[in-house]
Length: 296
Image 1 (cartoon, rainbow, N blue to C red):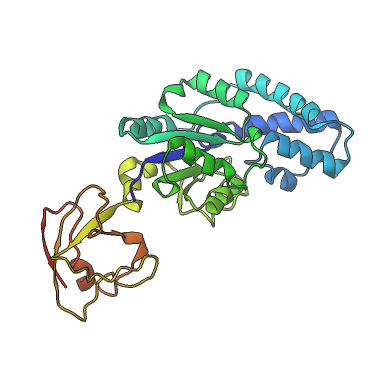
Image 2 (cartoon, rainbow, N blue to C red):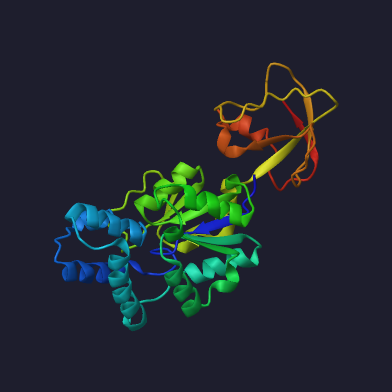
């Protein structure tokens, strides 16, 4: 299992659009004459515009269509997008994107924003060249927390979901990644108020914490090759036990290397196992070590 792709949310992760959306939504609420509380608005964070409009129509029994409300909101959003002096990229995210791109890691955008808004952001900040694909939640049947958007993003990257991780800042996005079974990094920003990070695998507040060299450790593997034909390794993934049997003293020849489809190779991920003491752990070869022998 190796790190091959990063699936980015946009709002609150790449660009600081949450304040713009907030201004646009509350201006729309004012035009419609509906009293939307702060508690209710917080539940909209990370949700697609159409989903929010559907909720408002059902909740306040509005005689307008989803498209009518979406047009009002997007009109105000477009105005703030080009006129708000505080609108900029999240600090450190451009450098993070560039590092992953230079390392050959595929990047896919998976945002609840409309494709129009995504294209506006990519054009304004010149991000198009870094990404292999973009998905808008507006084009899907279900928005976050439904996992569909991240499963499709992994397909666009043409990588198994186990080789990907999601970067999110909202409760809905984190729940979507959790439901998809994809490793999730939660970016905790000053604008992500009232969000729940319990289902995230990792919480960061600075993109330096998400550097490629830091993230690879969550996806690193090593290979173990049995000495001789007989496979005596006791390999049981996802069970918290030592992967070797100490009942029989055997000699194991091992080597590190790239993934190969060979029946006599056993693939072990460190996250699947726990070790009862440091002595057991010391028996395992380091990832960077040359070819050698291991005794159990």
